[in-house]
Image 1: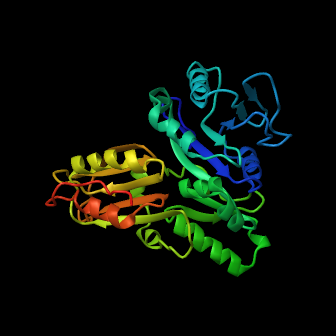
Image 2: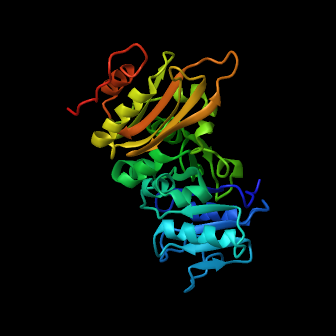
Image 3: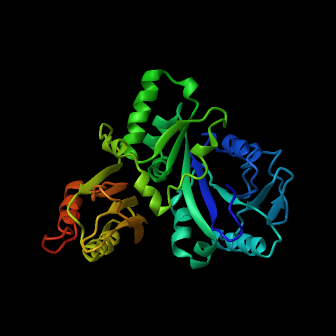
Length: 338
């Protein structure tokens, strides 16, 4: 449903390596009959991110188009542009229901996502819905081998959309799927063919909405494959013993000092000692937050599930440190680098 003027505007970050099909997908989103007005922010002015029919170069920062799209070209700071859009929306100069930010093919999505953590003015107007990454099935294996940015885009994704699947054999596709799930077990994978996909796979995913962690499929998280020699891997920490929240927050304060650049995404639902409500926890690199996720339901299993995605993380040492943050354990210590 379109966001009301009083609600936070949902934001989707659309990323993917060069040639994956972001532009085609974005054009599909903009031309679909969904009844919403979408503000599009282009990562670089020099690129034709929507295509020649939809994106018109202009000296103006904001270009309004007949199809209900408002296009902003990022020639300045993203925070400033989001602020300008919010201000114009508030006084009725612009009307839009959501924002899509399209990054360049060589972009790391982390700095864009962090904008919604660190800037209070942005947080008052916008809610980061999800990072959607388009993956070129024909070239992804090579891109993941050779390009750090391609790995980052997969690791940060809340949804992975596979393009060009018709150009690869079933065995190649299965191998790619296994690799992607090993790198990011929490991101659902769906096909996209020439930009055609169910818009429910792109919009209103709630991947960055903390409450949405409660809806993660536990069986999906079980598939944490390490068959490939990846720098980026993931693991899931589970415990039925409650956490001491102060210990866990202190531990993460230490972890981000030493592992912050390698901790790409982490999020989970926590069972906390002395609390009758769920605590939802997530972070990007060195920024993390915890808040209430509402009461545990009657008969619901009170269990902590914490998903971590990162580069060269010492999983065994992390698990040991998390164990020490549980009620009844001795004080936690930071995993040391070897």
